[in-house]
Length: 158
Ligand SMILES: [Zn+2]
Image (tube, rainbow, N blue to C red):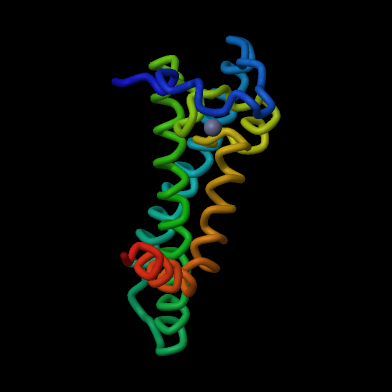
């Protein structure tokens, strides 16, 4: 796998975070694993609950209506947890490949404080802020882009 540290020189002027230590990685790994187990545990519980519901022989209309609501809530919840579970797996894989704690954008270190708050962080705070700023700018720029083009056309005329 290509290392993200190849393009590390991009943001020299920005605040640099210290690389996280092996001990810190272990702490974050434990956090990731316990989060993963908690989510997987929730999945198991839901499965058991679903199984029990199938054995109920007599259902009146109110019961099945409640089950529909319960099912849709469970599904929505599962999608969000599934997404987080994927991020955890990716982070754990990065730890195994010694790529954890390195920004995917610029290859700089992601600070331990940031990783403690969000162990699945894939970008350093600088890149995260920049990408959020760019998103905002895209929204504002959309209208004025065509005007810019027209001006370019006019000035390039002989
Ligand atoms: Zn970065």
